[in-house]
Image (cartoon, rainbow, N blue to C red; front, side, top):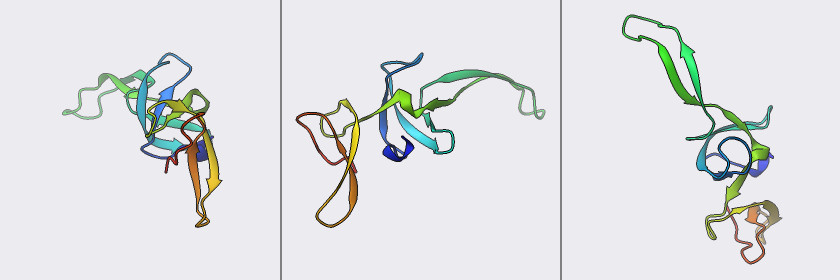
Length: 107
């Protein structure tokens, strides 16, 4: 799954508490098949004060979300889509949109 997604891809959440929202991938973890998406899966963390200038308290931050709960948004048709792979005539392997009438290269 992670191979189908890259940094800075726009994604659509298809499952979980943020279903229907969109965001951009900040980081990917290929070992656990999870992604960090901006504005998605916000959690509250209780943080102790670290110094006199940092008072601590309850902070909100993004948490990792499983890649199976995300779909890539095609840049040409602006719809959530599945991703396929194909080789161009130059021999380069690229991702493409698998929607019925689109089939545009995503890379």
